[in-house]
Image 1 (cartoon, rainbow, N blue to C red):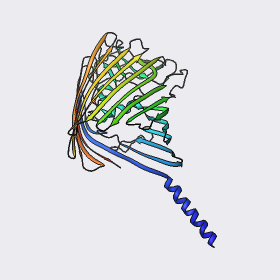
Image 2: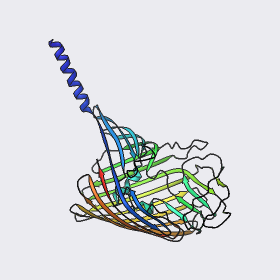
Image 3: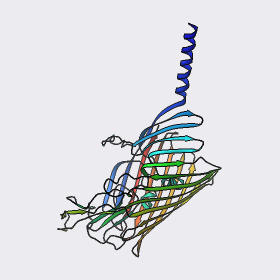
Length: 412
């Protein structure tokens, strides 16, 4: 009898220790707002989301393997709280497993790129909403018949892609027109892996006197045909954070190529008709490179920041480069924080250049540690040929895009 009791006690103690060594956490949050945007003739007014926080739901866990070694996972998906995510739930925001210890962390799967995390050092709006500096820096939108870059063929839509589309083929769809716009070339140029990368391996170092670094390599995986390099990517971050100082540098390089859809207008009316569209094949002989340097300093009464970003496309017939400078400020006033930023970008291609600038200001009032209300206003001014917007309503070349949003955020 005594042996049975001892065995039961030992089993209970073991089970308690095992459960204490493992944990699983359900987490998430929602951000909804009223947003109004005007970009030339294009307008939007209604409910939107993700003004200061990206709505999500996820689960993560960690297991203590002993000897200072732990294993963990993190599965996280975006959601549309205004409609209940009608498209279904997935884990495209993050899907990783990893090993952690005194050496740092080794992580596998779909994850944020180290270079993307540099932006959080200096963007007061956290790369969210109408005030995000990525509205200007995240992509270069060419539109409406200027001579800048590859915008030379009428009715051409193009982008930098990491997907191998196989051999050139014909399709029945035509380029999308903006309401009231002329049917000129429209290109949206950006790194598809700018925020996250699939099939990646990432190492995160421990902090060493405030210094830390991380490195990611992505094997791509979008290449389902003959291309071997498309989608492959390297991303690195070097950072120092101690006391009021936070400085970080990131560099990212993605292999891919320009893909385009070429069409011909048969009737120029308010409802134009199109000839058949030709889609070009994907390529893997071009490289998109991004360098970001960000720094912030907390003065106590306010925190100020500066960020410099340079993007370049090499290997295309018309190399593109873009440089963006951003100034930011946070001013805490009790439970309220006032925020502001100014970003200015200059894009150059084929001897031509044009600029885009954004002024953003807003506030966040914390109702608790998990709930906040906020408001943001932003305005983008485009030179002729550039068409960046604050979101929700796309701009045409030379348009001014402005918008505001007021909303509430809650996370758990």
